Length: 370
Image 1 (cartoon, rainbow, N blue to C red):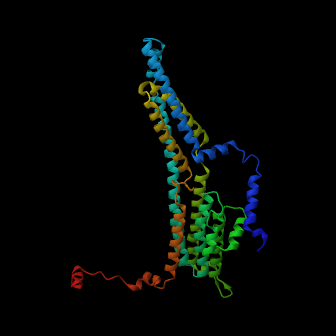
Image 2: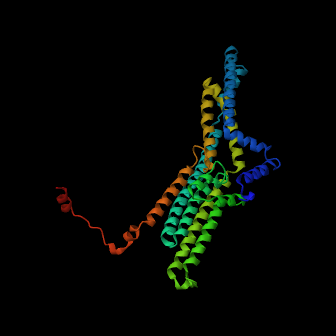
Image 3: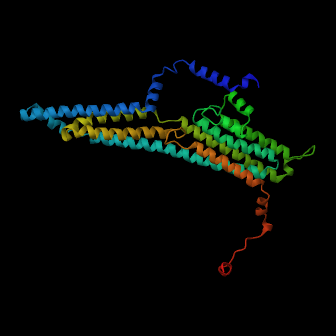
């Protein structure tokens, strides 16, 4: 095999290209994103809130001791003034922004779930058309094979990986006979959206099928002389278009995250609230304030992180969509469609000459039971 089709050399060239990009590894934003992914930023935020609440509770206790020692002094004035401060307005705005953000994140997760539901439906519908309408079974088998591989290519694309990466299923698909080594290496060597690589192959096969089935011997029959086949070409091409549109919508969801300015304002609300609230709570609740602040900040940080995970529903987090199961479902059902379409009784069942099933009456069932 030529060296240009070596997967190892291709991966090394891509890795070197990424490492040579200026400022990529030293990006401060990338560092913060990596810290946030591991949850350290959330943990440090909760620890800071609890520590600040303990400091506020300690200082409030000192103020009470001073107020008891000097009634009517500055300590009494400070306690009265802090007790009258109302943080409910800031808290209400913060909770509203938190709920709004979580709803937006969940909406994106739900859209991803619906799109993969459409992808499963469209793949199985396309496979049924291919298995029953295409006379040459070698073309039908190739199309079914590409439909299966297309779903795995979509999974890899939505996770920012290549189908040939060790984390993905390229080698397993080659082992199963669903993908050839040459196809995998050619796809990896030519940078592209890999799902569209297989969509291109599907359209090429459909075009070959149309020309092949219009040919009788050495004579090419004009398309208008075969009205049925001319009508079947359009829904086959429409199925390819539907698959292309669905993966395009999935890529759009993955690429368009929440606005950065909105996340910044959301964290400003968090810190503003949890800096002011413990000051007020320490006066009214004493040492219960750190407990309340720790629990509430932990819950809120968990919701923030949960929403962040839901923004991209195609990853490998526990809350992400089970793309492996979806791809496995498509593969198993298309294999079942292939087996079903090759069974000779299938067309007999569809033939109206087989008649209607006999409906047994209640009396017949009673007689057969004795």
